[in-house]
Image 1 (cartoon, helix red, strand yellow):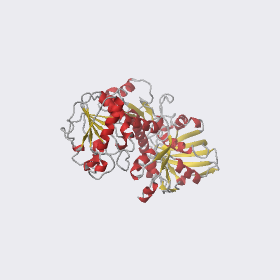
Image 2 (tube, one colour; image 1 turned 180 degrees about the horizontal axis):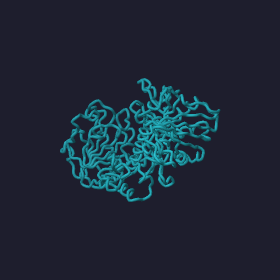
Image 3 (cartoon, rainbow, N blue to C red; image 1 turned 90 degrees about the vertical axis):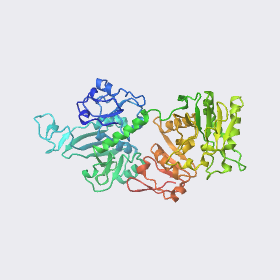
Image 4 (cartoon, helix red, strand yellow; image 1 turned 135 degrees about the vertical axis):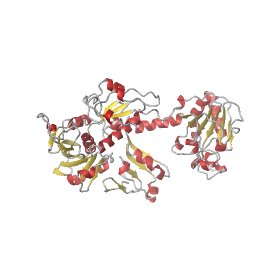
Length: 541
């Protein structure tokens, strides 16, 4: 997104004032465009920029739409995963972004919400009058400096839209008060089952999937203390008390400017994830005709005690990509792989054992005799080293980890000693590493092979918006370097199982739910988890 000049972002927005130069996402609040109905302005906003590298424009409306049944609304922490590429969306109102994520968390507690009511105690806005105006039909024409002004809110209607199961059950109104920022929602909820305040917070602590959005505050705070809070729902612990055995009054703070902008940024990121050009270039979109191809493969196969290959699966997995490249008639194909974790040149970890295996598998698959030339110099190979055979020759480099700069790239970077026209990555299990043979090969065209592309598509299906994964099982003996991945995955799955938690505990790792976002780590060894509520969570074994 690119900010528009102040005079352009106001009510005088017109097509002629918007440049096509680089704007791909526009966040807009104007009486001229708070619906997705076709207009000259909306048509211009949605026209793709001239660069083919940029996606079509998207528009985020920072207000509830007039055509609520036509223009979709998305609230981060509620239904953001349902976004499917719509060009114009609304992120509802700042009040809805406070109430809705809290209702989403509360709906899973005590049998769900039976009914509720709220009053929004809202800071003044730009639409209100500084002094009394001669208008007797609207209370908002009275001076905001001198009055508490009853007002309406569209949050009830948007809550009905976001939560069809609660339609007609949550009603509310609003009052405007003479402060310039930070508002509060006085929310009364009645649940279908009895629930006490402390039990509610304990359950929400476990079931709140978006601690970056919904947070509990135990301090003796006032409105100005929440200026700049990015969380759109800050529950005031001391402003929450029991009404009945199944009813609780909640006080919810929100910075109606800053936190609302944070929510819009969350949705903008979600839109970018869905709408951005394809993250990787498929092998199908690259040409290999008479090209010098560098193909990163993963031949890190298990070995028998005598050094022979125990399982050829990883070599076989690379065949579809390699055969596709060879079918197009490349000048040559240079393959590179690691094997084990050698400290320097270790003959027991040489990749030379894979040359005859690959030659045999290719010959069996194509019905033609194929040979694979082993190159002992590895990543230090020169043009002469990979030019000894004719067109279409296949070369296999020595173990990439025989070179120190493979795992520890130098500041000067890596310069390949032979020409590379196309770099094809087919090493999924190594693609998370910033190793020279993965990220340091300079080539005009880069693509991914069929195996890596399939893995990406599977992850997209599992972690995308077509459905949710209930349980993720993490394997491997080294858990510490998987924590960033686990934290990211925990936003999307309900439970994560890790089999080697003892190493994590031994290294004194503490998982915070403030970064764990959705799910606790379920381990075979107790781990002390801490939460954004500043209360310890009991470990589950």
